[in-house]
Structure formats: structure tokens, C-alpha cells
Image (tube, rainbow, N blue to C red):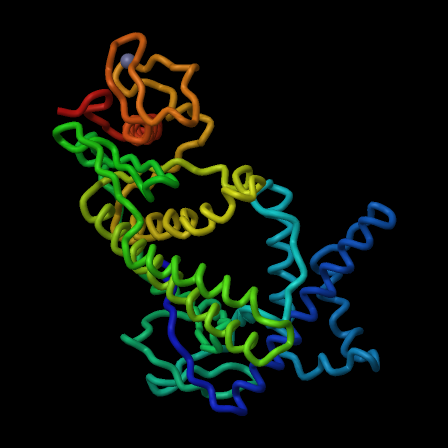
Amino acid sequence: MRRAIKLRLYPTKEQAEELDFQFGAARWVFNDALEQRSSLWKERKGSISRSDLIKRLPRLKSAPETAWLKRGDSQAMQQSIMHLDEAFQRFFRKRGRYPRFKSKHGRQAISYPQRVRIVGGSRLYLPKVGDVRAVLHRPVEGEIKTVTVSREPTGKFFASILVEDGREAPVAPEEVSASDAVGIDLGLVHFATLSGNSDGRNVKVPNPRHYRNALAALKRQQRALSRKKKGSSNRAKSRLKVARAHERVTNARNDFQHKLSRLLVDENQAICVETLNVRGMLRNRALARSVADAGWHGFVSKLAYKAQESGRHFVKIDRFNPSTKTCSLCGSINDDLSLADRSWTCGNCGAEHDRDGNAADNIRREGLLKLQAAGLSVSGLWRHA
Ligand SMILES: [Zn+2]
């Protein structure tokens, strides 16, 4: 099983400077590769492969104007090209937007595919940088696969370590009852609505107060920043305040998502969630902000890996299943339902539905049907007692 471990790094001044150099080299290589791909396409619908881009690197190092790249870590620079390639793959599969140039402002990161190791329990060896002081909350067991080192806009350094622990993932049960399964409808009004519990009630999970407070503080800081004159020292201070407020929002969100996903995985044998059309939603700019804030993607991936390491079924449902419009009791479809309708009555069986609760019930049923189709024994499909 693979698991990700995040730890804080405390580089010395010299190490921080070397890391900054390495961030710069990796960023330059990423941007150069993006430029190559984009201009070839624009000029003559041409393309350049990942391996050809990697082969360009030695030539760049020997050219006088780009000789400074020699000091860059070769594998980390190759990794930049791989990351660009992955971004293009996501774009082609309509899972992401067209790759953009990386800026020297904001978060910086490099990835090492190998050669990173833990030294003496409190240091991380990074190629070209040396042994960097690290805070490890528990020993890292297993084989280190890749390590991503980042500097956040607040100036803090972190390492994300992907470890293969050599253990098999626990096997999920072959029998699932609807009462041990949960369907999750992710939304903007409430962060999540859960499928009905034993008395048929749908629990609604709001975004927590500390998250909303952090978000309100962030908005204040951003307004303050926009009033500061460009290039002034007050603007620089204000920018750091915004970065810190951002960090608090991210931390509050992660904390909340970890707790909620842990609870749902502990209490259920099957976790069903709808894949969201985030890309389509991001086209609408007003919604984009809320979508980014809601951080659904991060939540779904937390659910997925917690389910895997705990031996639970994790089922993603295509969003084209009309989960909102289908009556969860009789299955008839209400084509008249508009986005503004928060509740509705089924024209066929007369059931009263809360929009999101009904969707969550349908998501659970779709998830259970998928498990059944995969050969599992499923009980209580339509209405669980
Ligand atoms: Zn009905």
C-alpha cells in the first residue's frame, strides 16, 4: 500500500537558497517545455514528445545562455517535464484546463523521483541541498517512492513523501447491506448531504465555523491588499498576510475533511460519491470561487485512500445519472425540477423530497447497484429498514 506523509522542513539559510535555485530551475524547464509544445502546435500543428523534451535538457545545459541549468538537479528537472505531460494528459481527457506557465510568485515545488532518504530520524537528505532538518511525527516505514518539496507563499517549507509500505491493502467485505452504505451528495449550500440513516433522515454537514471564519478573514485581507500601492512595502506585508490567511483556510479545510472522511469510512462498509463536473462548473466564474473553496476534489481523494487502507468499498458514480431528478422511492424522473427547487413532491408516488437528501439516497443506490454488478452480495437496495 502506498501512503503519503507530509512533514515540515527547516532548511538553513544556505539550504533555503539552494532550494530556491532548484525551484527556479525546475520551473524554468517546465515553462520552456510548455512554450515548446504550445508554439509547435500554433505554428504548424506540430508536437514534441516527452522523451524528446527530456533529450533537449543536455543540449540546454551546454548552450551558453542556459548553462546555469547545469546546477539544477537533472532528475527533478526531468520530473518537471513529466508533470507537464501529465497536465496535458488531463487536459486531453477533459479533466483539467490547458497548462499554464508557472510563476515565481506563489507556491514553489520540485519533485525527486528517488535518492531522497531519511537521515537519523530528524533529517531529510535532498540531492544538491543536503540534510535538511525535518519534523517527523512518527517513523517513516517502507520504501520512499517520490518526494515533493515545496515552499508555500507564507515562506514555510514542506516535504510530501510517497511511501510504499510493502503491505497488502485489506480486502473489502463481499456482502454489503444498504444500512452499512452511505451515499454522499456534495454541494454548495451544505458541504455534504448524507443518504438517509435508519429513520430515513438525511444528515446535512455544513462547512464548519472555523473554516468559515478563516474564509471571512481571508476576504478581508484580500480587500486590504487590493488597496495597497503596487511595489510598496505595505503591499509586500499585506501579501504575506493574505498568504497566511490562505494557509489558515487550507488548514481548517483539511482538518475538517480529514475528520469527516475518517468518520464516514469508520461507520460504513461502502462509500458512494458522485463524480462532479468541476470543469464545467469552473466555466462559471461566480461558481468557480465557491467550488474551489468547497474543495470537493480534496475531500473525495481523502475518502478514497482512507477507504482503501481500511478495507471499504469506494464507489464513484457518473454524474450523468440524474441523481437529483429521480425519485429515490419509486424511481420515476421529475424533468420539471429546476436548480432553484430545494424540495419537491414526486408526481408518481407522492413522496416529499429534500433535493440533496434525495440525491444522496440515489447515489447510495447507484453505488450499491455497481457493487452488485461487480458480483457482490447486496441487500436492502431500494428502501433500507
Ligand atoms: Zn416517487
